[in-house]
Image (cartoon, rainbow, N blue to C red; front, top):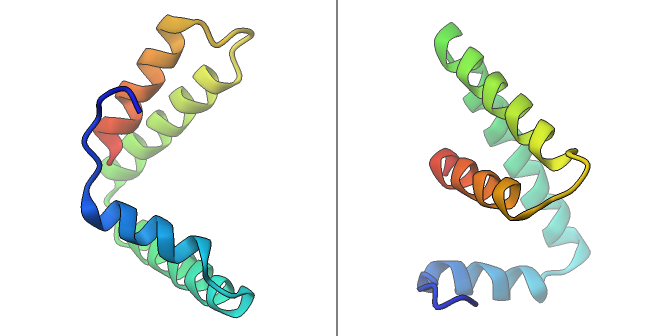
Length: 83
């Protein structure tokens, strides 16, 4: 994996997602949606504008005609800053 260090919690969560039942999946996705909507509702206007700008930029990069090395690198950098 390109010599990247993976956090233990990340591995634990991936493993638990692999073995979850359909009911557990529905519950998890419901909680994720609710958390996302709450976070969006608490945003200020400046934060909302920044999020929308990043979303547009990410979409533009993904929908580019070709995902050459420069676009893929820029997309990865953008995603790292959003985390």
